Image (cartoon, rainbow, N blue to C red; front, side, top):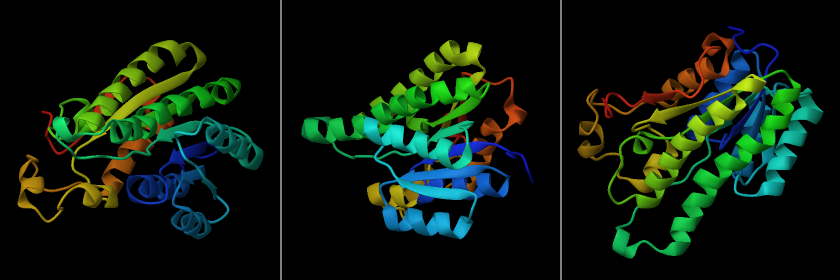
Length: 244
């Protein structure tokens, strides 16, 4: 316990799934957590359950003004920003021939522009605090593409590239930037896109099972903590062997 003592973390998409697991774990390890999400009821309930160590802010990651409000809330409530987990993301399944521009741009706005805005907004506060850790949740699809998900693959490859570029630029300020690349994770987002009861989901993974959200959160905790103090620009697969 206490691996994030005295740290303040922002977790986007924090009301359910991986983000919820990250918020809970970070708070248990001593962090103060700002939970951002568009799912207000779930986010408020989670923050209330965690208690004084958490606050919920309605947050559309594609909205530049909303990002400024989230960072301002973290500083006003807890004093500084040490960790950002860019966790929020959406998927869309379609063939290239039937994929609409509107759906493509919607995925880009959340998965790619949202990550950029988050990284940009925390540079100042983290520099003022003497450093920090940005953890970008990419995907196994950001290392090896998946058919019928061209927008999702494009954005997750983009997150991989932004992680590397951010790591090179921000190291001088003591800010580390790493990415996590989950495989098949048992979350509501997966259920929104696939038949989670399909054997194909499990059989696509060498370990023959889906990950629990807590297994991704454990890696995010390591990257957020000082235990990974000499890691930046790393792309960490947590995918049961899919990209091996």
